[in-house]
Amino acid sequence: MVAGHGQPVWYDLRMQPGHDKLFSFRWDIDHRACITDGLPRIMRVCEEFGVKNTFFINMGRSTNLKEWLSKGGLKGSKAKLKDMEAIHLIKKIGWPRFILETALSRPVGRSLVGSLEKLVRAGHELGQHGGSDHVVWSRRFFELPEEVIAQDVEQSLAEISRLFGTPAGFTSPGFKSDERITRIVARLKYRYDGDAIGGEPHHPSFGQTHARHWRIPVTLCGPRTVPLLEWHGARNTPPSDIIADLRQRLDQSDWVVLYGHPCYEGVKDDLLREVFRAVTDRGFRFVTHEQMAERLYAWPASSGAPFSAPSTGQATLSNATNITSDSSGSGTIGRCSRNGA
Image (cartoon, rainbow, N blue to C red; front, side, top):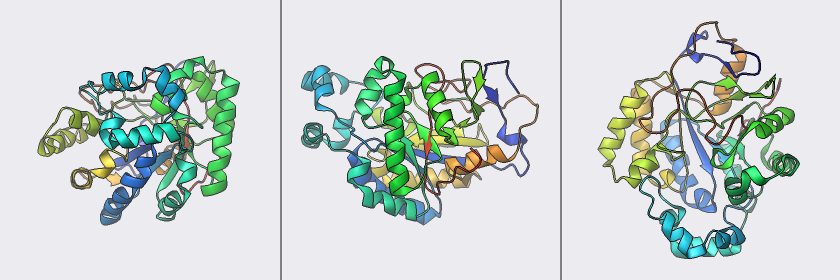
């Protein structure tokens, strides 16, 4: 279906030649613990199953002492620990480590290049996650001028490209995105962005312009922007019930994008194996986001109505919708081809 002028253009993956059931696991690498603790475990599980995943890397800071103090410091963090739908970073890595990393504010990607090089050599996709400060983007996105965001994104893009190769895609921290990001992503010629939850892949728009790149939404998610497995963890759902819920959700769609953070879902390798097993048992083929995007570029969609994405039961929207505003960003690399963008 092609929407009206200035509206998103939607396409149905099921209508394409060679249709099969596609599954992509998206990992957002926000914190250094995602690399040091989670990445080795995820890579081992992927190797066991012979599959590749997609990882979006925050090259800059994941903690910011000034921002943390401005939000109440210890008092503010303790209040967030009461959230019953999500697991705060403090619970994931512990108070001592959280305070140390907040005080040091060390960059994530650029301080752990060797681990990311191993990831790329193993054939996984590495994409861009925001700019140089994850916290500022997440908390003060709508205060930032477009030219400031654009310069930040461009500098991180240049750094990733120099170290690992040019990324195919981009994602915004916390799904904080709008038409400014869509415009930046289009100008920088990313192949796709992932700044939506729910709905089908589509070409986003800014103003009256349809972007050339694709938007590939997360289709399975908990409430708000909480990853599905993390939401279950916050509710203390037994592992067997988590897998049963996942199987039910997988049965509702022929293409699925599940996301998480290596510092939480990635360190639970036994559960991750069960997730991968459920996916393969349901007949899905693991693909990276870049492979999914190339499938979309290869075959124009039919004029049929777009299919319905699976219901998350909590937070997935009926159409691919940006959580915070309108259009979005970009981010993924690995094989790193952006030909024809």
